[in-house]
Structure formats: C-alpha cells, structure tokens
Amino acid sequence: MSTFVQVMLDGLLAGMLYALVAAGLSLIWGVMDVINFAHGEFLMVAMYLSYWLGFLAHVDPIVSWVASGAFVFILGALTYRFIVSRCIGKAAMAPLLATFGLSMFLKNFCLNRFSPNFRILQTTVLEGKKIILGDIVIGLPQLVTGLFSLAILFALYFLMKKTRLGWAIQATAMDREAAELMGINTDRIYLLVFGLGGACVGIAGGLLTSYLAVHPEVGALFGLIAFLIVAMGGFGSIPGALAAAILIGLVEALAGFYIAPVFKYVAVFAMYLAVIMIRPKGLFGW
Amino acid sequence: MSDAMLSVNQIHCAYDSVPVIHGISLEVKEGEIVAIVGANGAGKSTTMRTIAGLMHPVKGNINFLGEDVTQTPSYAMITKGISFVPEGRRLFSKLTVRENLELGSYIEKNRAVIDERLEEVFSLFPILKKRENQVAETMSGGEQQMCAIARGLMSRPKLLMLDELSLGLMPSLVEKVLETVVEINRKGTTILLVEQMVQEALEIASRGYVIQTGRIVQEGSARDLLESDSVRKAYMGL
Image (cartoon, rainbow over all chains, first blue to last red):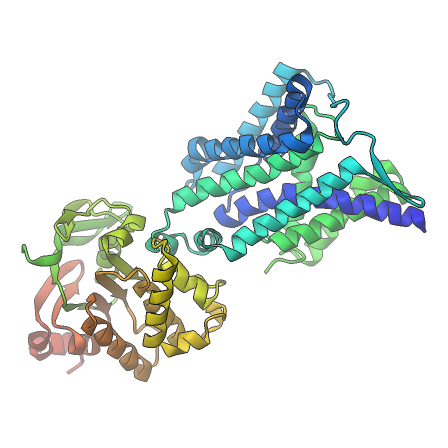
C-alpha cells in the first residue's frame, strides 16, 4: 500500500511540474493559435542558465528560477517580435516551421557551446534532503519544484481570470479586432503572452535544475509531453492543463513502477492516443 | 468643413486590391445623429471600418477634431474619442457582461471613473445590471446588442459609431434600441450609424447619406431623404 502511495506522490509532483511547462504552451496556443515548437528548447535554455548560475556564481536554483523566468520571458518576447510576428497571418504552418527552426538553432547552439554532456548541479541547498513519513520518502527538491510550479500556475490563473490585463488577453484571444476597438494594442498583448508563456517554462526549467541533469536534448521530451497535455487538456485552458498534466504524471509513474521503466512513455502515449480517438477536442476542451 | 467633428474626404478603400469604396466624403458635426443608409454590400460597413482604423484607405483622408487620423491604428482611435460598435455585436462571448463592459473602458485606469461609468450604463440599460455576472453568449440577441452599445459607451466617446444595430433583432426591439440611441445623443454623444433599415434610421437621424456600390448617391437632411422619391422607391418599397 505504501508503495502505491509513494508512486502516486511521485507522479503527482511530476504532474505539477508538467502542468507549468504545458501552461506556457497552452497560453500561447490559446491566445495566438500559434504552436511554439521551441517550447522544449526554452526549457533547456532555462536549465542551462540555472546550471551555469549555480556552477559559476553559486546561485542556488531555489533563487535562480527568478533569473531563468525573466530570461526566458525576454527570449519569448524577442522570439515573437523578430520571428513569430512576421509569420502571423501568412500560411498556417509558417509560425510552426519558424519556431521549429529556432528550436534547432537553440539545440545546436548549446550542443556546440556546452557539449552533449549531462551536467548536474552538485551541492544545492535542497540536495539529498527528504521528508520521511513512515515508509514514504519525498525528495525535497521534487516537492519544492512541484509545489512551486503549482503556485505559479495559480498566479497565472488569477492573472487571467481576475485582472483587467487577463480579460484583455482573453478578449484578444476571442476576437482580436473587437479587442483593438477597446483600445487594446493586441500586438503588445501577443508580445506579452509569448513572454509569459516563456516565463512559465523558464521558471519550470530553473526549478528543475535542482534535481535533473542538463543536456542539449533535455527539452525534447518535455516539449512533447507539453503538447500532449495541451491537446488533452483543451487549448488555452489552464485547469485543463493541470488536470491532464497530473493524469500524465500519474500514468507515467504507475506504468514505470508496475510495468517497467521503459514502458512509462508507452503508457503515456497510448493513453493520449486513446483520449484523442474517443474525444478529439481533449478531455476538458470546449 | 471646419466646424465638422469628423470629416472624411474622398476615401478609396480596397480589400486585397479589389476596390470597394470609390471616393466617399462625409462629415459629422458635433451633436448630430448621422445615418449612412444603403443596401447590403454597398460599402457602408467598409466605410465605418475605415473610419475606426480597422483598415486604412488607399487614397483620401480622415480628420477627427482637426487631427488627421487616416493612418491611426484602430486601438488608438478610442483614445481620440471614437468608439465603434461593430456589426454583429462582437462581444467577448465567454466573458461576463461585467468583464465586457470593463474592457470597454480599458484605456481608463482610474477605478472611480470606471465605476461611475458602469453606473451610467446600468441606468441606461437596467437589464445589464441584472445580467452583470452572466456570460455574454448566453444572453438573448437584444440583450447582447444592448451590452455592445453599453460597452461602446464605457470609454465615454465623443463620437459613437454604430454598425447595423438592427441586425438579427425583432422589429419591436429595433425601435427600442433606436430610442436609446436618441437618448444617448441627447446626453451629448455625437452618433454616426449605419443601417439597412432605412426608414427607421432616417426617422431618428438629423442628416443622412445614401451609399450605393461604393459611392454616395444622395445626401441631405434626414427629412428630405425620407421624402425623396428615389429613396422611397429604392429602400422603402413605396
């Protein structure tokens, strides 16, 4: 029994992190109808930043996530201004292919600069610390990352639902022209949304460095899982993303433990296929 | 020309280089209700969209309160004092009435001013007060139209532009909505409206323009237009 609870807890914490990564993608997708193919690479960039800040300047990930979030916010905003804004309104595939190109660039840039080696931060504040409740062990880095991701997600949800800026973002998503007529500079909203989407994944990446190794390919799997979550949770829906992310976290943990570690993604993708075949608009889509 | 609040001078507009407006000029003076009437596809909405900055003319210019606004982007028009209620209402369908109205005064940052304006539009449309927390798309067509007008008023515009208010409303409701327009005008807002319901529109307007295939074919006081044979024949079936 306690093993089961342990596995569920691991899945839950992983799911919370996935939710934050996916929320960034979902936000951009929901507002702009643009798939940011470089989303996973944004995570990788955030992880490298956090890693180097920790390695060279001895800034702990528990602090440096602020820098990662801010850095990827700017990276996102620049991506919108110089790449995505030029593709919008052209062929539907244009932003997708352009951001795919950006992802290739980022990946190969890091490969070239930092080598393909796995790098992990040693001696972080949380390293090796754990909470032990009877037979259940919770790693503090995972716990802090999970809860933090959840908190950021709630903050994002609050921003979208309860503030005038959030309404303006939603209005832009629903009817860009009508939003313009309200005096909303929708180009600026797009810029902000791309930045915010980047900040989500940037914060997630910054936190993740406390227990996961960095390498140039690290973003690929996270990016893919984020797509699954967004498609399953419904485009642009933050609660949907959270629910789908936790579901994926749980399936991954359960399959990894009770079947075999190599099968955990088989189970995740099989579930995705099943959901999409039965309910193409996703579990929580409108 | 100089006393006009809005003057549109010989504008030509095109969609993807297909010309649809061939040199339209019109003006609106402060305090007036001006109606642009004409058949479907005549170019009425295009004219309105161009004035609102959603598209820009290929030739000609638009002046508002002595300032050239021909190339002003649409989001900046509201700060100049022009508010546009587009055809088909275009409410933010999944937001509540309250949130829609709040967005109408998006450019206003002072909370007290916004609350004051909310009270104003609620007194003009009491039904909206009752529907305050209802999602816009769940309201009836008439209520949605009122919400759209109210949203347009939330910036306290100098000029309110209304495009096809009557669309999709039953006749008794059209009359009610137009009465409200007169009331808004009486309180000091200048109005430019576009209508396919020619008679109803001209009855509340002070002046009117008749548009046909991208050109103004007739203009004058609303009364003269109502009595003119060509208007009666073409648009009122008399």
